[in-house]
Length: 77
Image (cartoon, rainbow, N blue to C red):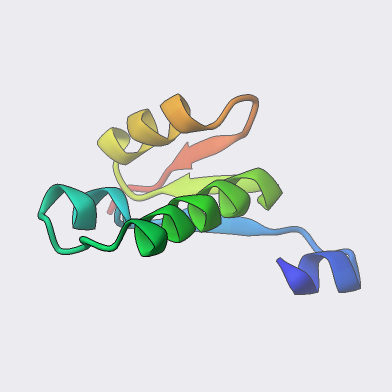
């Protein structure tokens, strides 16, 4: 994100896993401050990205609920 602003670059973010949601669901994270920081970082990454690439249709569906007016592409192999 820093390079995007510094060098006026496009920022495309690829999502292959839904962290921190998955970690919280599995009770791997128990410190609220850390959990909140991860959710804040996730929100900032989605907000600052010019485009988002999801690696499955189900990941795209989850991201669409969190982010408005953002291009989300699905890349399946």
